[in-house]
Image (cartoon, rainbow, N blue to C red):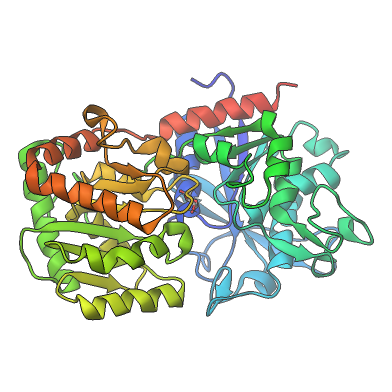
Length: 486
Ligand code: GLC
């Protein structure tokens, strides 16, 4: 249990319930909520994008101007997310746009300036709001300049003398690389080479700036924390992560069971719990609804689901070469997602050839995601890399056995059937090869066809796993405590 109550500013570029594009938003909602439940004084901050729920009517707490930034006025508006107070930084020239990061797959040209502004404003607003946090908790590249500016701009500022910073790494493949020219808004970069942010004589990365300047760093799973220190798994930042090894830990994300619980999920046609009769009946009803919804024949057949961003990170390129061959079996497969147009068109080609067994739904659809989780027997997550991954955790809660590559958080959360059936919660393969995925899918199908009772037992065991945020939040509190132990 916590020995000290911290005041914490949790800084994220998206927060579920207000605005979301991916897993970062889930964490930015659930972790502050869990910290609040542990009696921490936690507040959130995010940019006031046009699409943030309720932004227009949110009360203005502050109207001010960013110091050290030419002519940039901004407001701070107050919202709440899962009971946590959220400060939305409202600067129309940067955030009053149709999207958060990109339009038509084109990143906004001034993303460097936008997120530098956001990071700088997060710190600028604090004395003006009279909120003096012990911990400023940044997340991913968008907020990497928060630890950097805390040290370089506010290093001698009495207001921040007792403030420590933490950065969580949700995905280090995205680094926020910008030229000094693009970042002239920051006086820190005027005619100066900043070694703790630089990747070359001309460019800096915001992630590096965060990693090199935060007091503590965490990756969203223990295995990802280890991978980040290797050439192969660090996405090119091994030297930086190695140099910070003493301050780098891994904390596995939790599951927001208020949103992902088959017993209460309002997005399902039938609810069910972890007893065999209820699970079998509930999952069958969900499977029938899924088949109807996507246009597959309604019948009792092994169902494989996948919901993801269409990127190579998620291993779509391992699935594509073997999908047709797998579809020769008596199975149905549903893939839901948006992203890379090339991967989307390849999935459509497979669908055209096997439309009786395979559906690709090119959509970002939360309701359908819940239905796929509940109505499938197996869930595909053959990721090339996976900092944590949340869908495998949702799958287990829904009694849907994840088929994963044993990397990052997938390795930390799923136990392979063949390795030890008694504690198994899914199927794991290692080689980054389509054939390794195919063999593992065949392995799962064989068990389904020949030993359905074993599948049922493993499903029930998976449903009983508990990845609660409360436990993760306690580990974060320990990390905050360590930030003060020098
Ligand atoms: C990113 C990672 C994913 C992780 C999520 C939340 O989206 O790709 O693995 O679960 O962040 O931490």
